[in-house]
Length: 157
Image 1 (cartoon, rainbow, N blue to C red):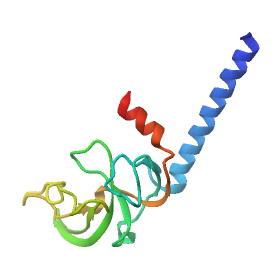
Image 2 (cartoon, one colour):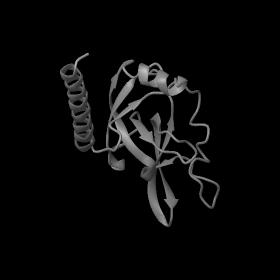
Image 3 (spheres, rainbow, N blue to C red):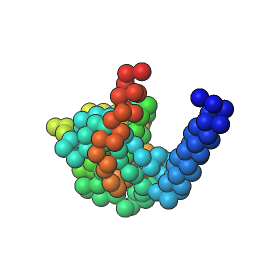
């Protein structure tokens, strides 16, 4: 490999990296969420979403979340976001204010999320649902299996 070929390869790689970064930041801005694309890592949402599927997300106002929507939320005991379907919308007292919260579970799970009543601790033992402040986004579109290689790398390397 001569010097010119090496320089062209590096320039191409840097250009591709720059394009990916610009698209990523643009997508974050357009979709209104810090994580507009997520890879499904479990089978809890089958048959709608499978491991390795990539899901496009958009930020959402809690008032625009309804039964049947698929939302992404953060739970204190996990290092990754949870993507599950809303089965009920409730209101609870939280910090002296009435807040919306969502009962969720995966389509492939037999019951609501196992830690449903303990996910968000309160002086009374925990909320019966996911509070609106923990919801990050709503699923918009699923791209089947395009995240299978990054998922494999994450799990095996």
